[in-house]
Length: 79
Image (cartoon, rainbow, N blue to C red; front, top):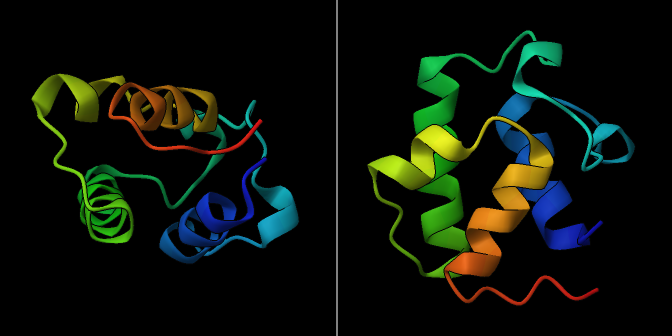
């Protein structure tokens, strides 16, 4: 798990960094609602200098999918 991404997600969702794992799903995070989804989008765009479109935003329903979207946008998350 990429530390920078884990820190961004932990801040957005009010979780601890160790709780951020690829298998974490939107349905498992009580604070992950539509407003937090937009907070997530803005935070990722700001942090990585990318622009997310509607299909990307709708696809981001888990940490693994967030990572896949970022990789598709050319973000290097390491291994």
